[in-house]
Image (tube, rainbow, N blue to C red; front, side):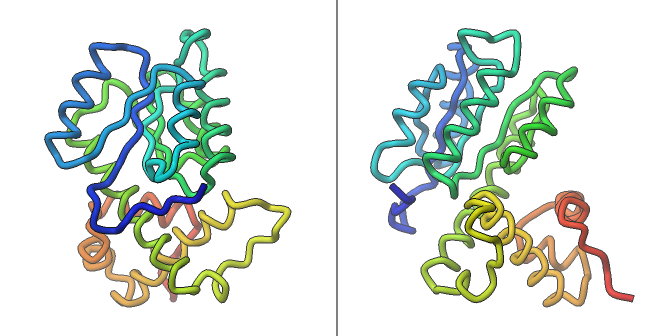
Length: 209
């Protein structure tokens, strides 16, 4: 089912982490910041959560999941399954310091962003806030019918590409409204300047000459 939670509810996040101590710490920290937190320890329990009504729009996913925690195979499969079940989900993946290739593969498969472990709580909260901003704006645009006019992904390209176009459009709109003043666009979007530069690079956005 599509995400249909009322806009006034606290943002919900699914935390997929098999390390009980780390999961408990992150869940408590996120709840302390106002998030509704659902926890899963493997791909099956994560999918069970995402198949429920009002599934979380945000997912924090450790790529090293059982039964193969030493590889990224299970985590990458979980990512694909989550996005197949709930295409609009913003998935942030957690990877080890020596797993850059897996992180980039995750982004290629549709992950919204990635963080390298051990990620600081501030960095994690910033990333979730950024993902939540895009998720809310995407939902608003869909409800307003704007995507019918602005999203050009072909049906056979799938919902992942359409979602990326919404993100790109939001960034382009904010930059244009700020006359490509990155500092002002970052303020409007609630992002750090370096994150705006990150997304400009991701979508190949350049200041007009």
